[in-house]
Length: 204
Image 1 (cartoon, helix red, strand yellow):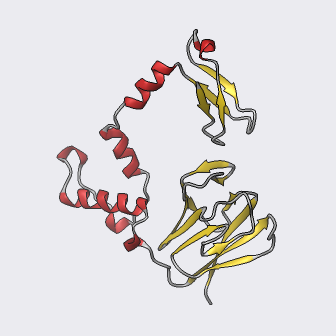
Image 2 (cartoon, helix red, strand yellow):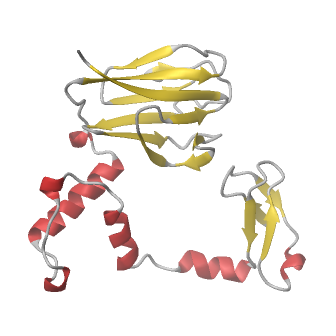
């Protein structure tokens, strides 16, 4: 059977016979992360498990929303039309809907290369959605480990979201591979061998 490390996405061949006693935990040879290996029948059961309403509610709750959009309806009374509208807007924002993209007034954004071939380079972010990659991107970095269009920065007012664009080698924040992650001023992330820092400054 083929197993995959959830941290670095490396794949390995594993002998199913070693799972006779149940699930096992092994260390990834590449990133030293822990890989949980389950018998094939357990994997099928886990994959077939549907996403419940509680899971969706946690997804909604994890998305920060402005105070003026929050609904104060008593949950026991059921969902109001306003609650449904807020949830729909929250999911659209999480998915990166263009209608939510907006550069905030009074701030400017840039990416500083702090490690890699272009260390010291500063890239200006002059629009609310910019792609980063080896080529065919708004911000082109000289890194052979990066995909052509590797990741994307979405600015939604006060929120800055980094999204991986299904890159081959992944996008990492705090050395954790991410699909999307909120960034703050001076947050660092890695694409290939290049480490970039988000810099937010006030416009005087």
